[in-house]
Length: 66
Image 1 (cartoon, rainbow, N blue to C red):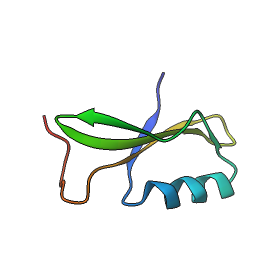
Image 2: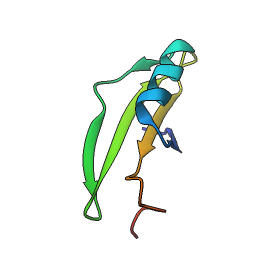
Image 3: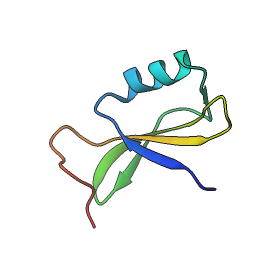
């Protein structure tokens, strides 16, 4: 599935804004361990059918581990 990924600082606020703009959630926000750190992920579909992934890293993280 092709989709765009956006790093956000506040996933709850970003999900709320996306939903207010007409996007719909695909499941719940989940926490996934990536490189030993918990990463929050939300999947949404915008009104045009584009799939969006929102990703919130822990506050102290500057990037995902390679």
